[in-house]
Image (cartoon, rainbow, N blue to C red):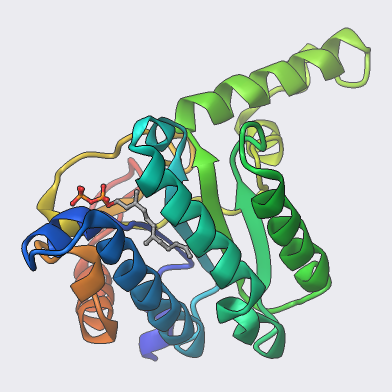
Length: 236
Ligand code: FPP
């Protein structure tokens, strides 16, 4: 019966790649490479265990402020992973979606993202939501613009705007996040899925993301299963 208590939607802030590498006397980019390997392992583990929705914070809108070398390493990692390393998603019927603004992502990254979305859009398995050039406040601003246009064009009545309609107009129409994991011990949300985490449980393991392996993930899920969620109601 363990599966009943698994979170429906897990969101991971993959923090600490840079520190992981620096502590080993390596460049920060080495940490991102290791982080990518960890992500691949975690995805397989999560979907094997029957997790239905997995969101990950791959690149924030603010990450463009990092050095040119770090940004281009990350962009090349995305291309490499979306082109070949994430191939297992097709076999496992995973539907891959992206959240974030397209501009100013490089054309090559956009084209591999589009291909992966196109190739998996008919899949009826778990959903893997990759937040790339993503910001939670930007998402709320973009949603507001989109709904406003619909109201101005007479396509929806202003009184129809409620929490569910807003959810339908975010970058992806996904169920609320149940469990947020942020590795590396930092206790911040950093503009991640602000609307979707309203009633989420939070977990902050001290390990850096490259060390957040399947065993760590299993511990995190066990911790979630112990939480008593109340959604603003009374204690069960
Ligand atoms: C935060 O750690 C991590 C990132 C900004 C990048 C996350 C990207 C990956 C794990 C690469 C793979 C992703 C895909 C989708 C293939 P940080 O660099 O801010 O760490 P620090 O706080 O120690 O500096």
